[in-house]
Image 1 (tube, rainbow, N blue to C red):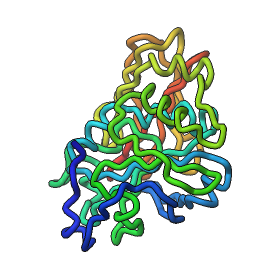
Image 2 (image 1 turned 135 degrees about the horizontal axis):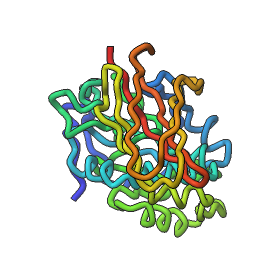
Image 3 (image 1 turned 135 degrees about the vertical axis):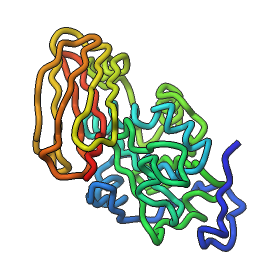
Image 4 (image 1 turned 120 degrees about the horizontal axis):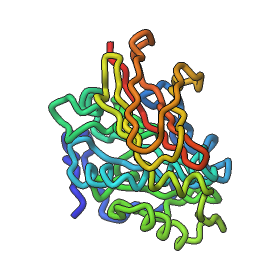
Length: 271
C-alpha cells in the first residue's frame, strides 16, 4: 500500500480525491549539486520523457523503490549516458527534511538516499511543487510525463524492477518512443556491480568491483564534469582504494568501465 503523506505537517490543507493524471505544471528546481532542472525547457521540450519520483526520506514504500534500483537502472540505460530518451528526477517532498536525512544520518530517514543514485536529487524548503498535483495519493508517486503535451500518463510507484518500469512506459505508447536495449555496455552494466564504502567519507573510499572483465578504469568527476582522479583496477573482485582527501567537500561521480561495461555511482566527500 502506498504510504500516505502527513499533508497537514507539509502545509497542504486538503488531499485531492482524484488520481494525479493530468497536465504537469512546469518547474525549475535545483539539485544537491547546485544544478538547475526546468521540466519543460530542459526535458519535455527536448522530446524526452520525464520520470519524477516524489518521495519522502521516512517513507517505507519509497525506500523499497530506492532499494530496487529500478529508477537508477532506467537512468543509466535511457538517460544522458544511455540512449538519451528520458530523465529521472527525485523530489523529496517533505519541507522539513534535512540534508542529513537525505544522506542517511538524520533523524527522519530510512537510509542514505544518495547511495547508488546518479540522477538529480531535489531537497528544498519551501516546496515549489504542488503535492495536490504531484502526489495526491501519497508517497511514493512516480510521475511519467509525455513530452508532446506535458501530460502525466503513468504512476509507476509500485514497479520494483527495471523490466517492469520499461514495460509500463513502452505499454503507454508515449509519442512513439520505445525504450529498448540501450547498447552492449548497458546490458553488461546490468550484471556488473560496484560497491563503495564508506560513503560518505572524509576522503578514503574502497571500491569493490564485480562483473567486470580484464582491467577496469576507475574515474572520479566533479559536479561540472571535470575528471579529478583516475586509476586502473583488475576486474573481477578487485578492491580499488582511492583518496580524495585533497579535494573540496561535496558530491562526486565515480565511474567504473571496461571494454563493454560502464557503471556510475555517486560518492560524497565530507569536511
